[in-house]
Amino acid sequence: MATTPTESALGRIQTARSESVPQDAPRTRYIPASDWNKHHPWPTPGGLRWLIFHGHQNGFARCTRKIGARVLIDEAAFLDWVDSQPIRPRSCSRRVGAGTQS
Image (cartoon, rainbow, N blue to C red; front, side, top):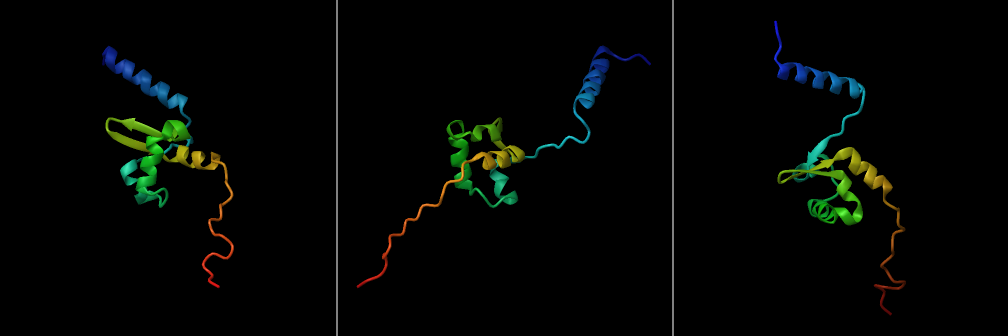
């Protein structure tokens, strides 16, 4: 049975793809931004929108993929991004003696 040029090219692409990606390689999960909180409690939807909007300033752009109007979050890249953020000491907004009356 003779194959058409398209069929043989498709076979070569599929073969090359299967040879280039190891079978045990972890695959990342892309979660739509609108569904993020079905999988993770943080950040909130408003906080996630802020991170996406300011992604080029805060480095979050490497966690997102935009396909048409849909924004997808790369879950593995998000977790790496969280780990790369500096840990800042919690600021105490209370003043000593605040809330006590004399």
